Length: 80
Length: 229
Image (tube, rainbow over all chains, first blue to last red; front, side, top):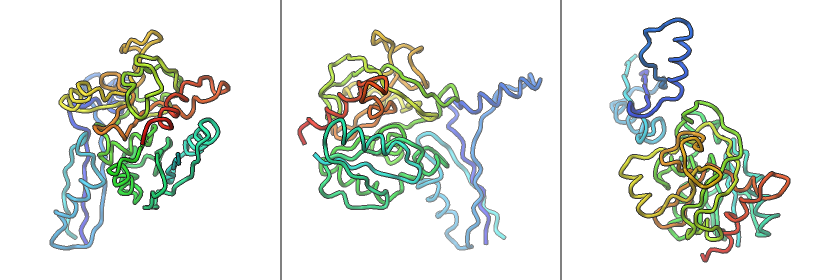
């Protein structure tokens, strides 16, 4: 078994409406030094160990987990 | 003319589309489950509004892999007419059947209100009954309606007249104030290169009787009925 952590973020040039709200909410709590906040997604996948995990996960990202037009992604594999 | 309304788990505008087609245009219409792969006998497919798969992951991001999508791709390749409304537009973009994508509204709020849109292309299969520059009053109801595409794509859409509808004020000016979600170029609806696939965030099927506050959606539906197949 291996655990894969996939991180998906909106491309940096795109306005992140949720991030804007989070930034304002942090400022409302008095954290005036907050320059920016962006919200992404974190997906944990547990997958049977094989030699193809990297290729398979990359394919999963492109087919479903990520919209490559608007999002960036990276993942790390923790082999159990 | 035979319409099909696709139902995904989480579709909620399916009945609106069904009744608008049946009762307002008088055409025949059937529901199609998203697992179906047979579109024989249909002339026009509607992907309705709602939140397919609860909008999990991304609006339309899960539905784009439903079996019906490949069938729709083949149907459109053969010249069939396809329109995505709201969530249907999101699905068509996710599936790559229309250019661009829909992002969360710049306000980060669900916007549910009647808006004005200007018909910028009245030669498509979806707008032939409208006048160029005509201002329609149509409702929107979405969180993820900010149309986005890269500048190259935008240039192509503008040059080829593929922007169908644009958010505007009462007089038809596409102002920033009239843009409810931050869409690039105030774009509310687009059409594909061939002209047989359209997507729009406003809901024409919810503006078809006086009691609904507007009947401006009828010209969109009627355009689809009367355009030559």
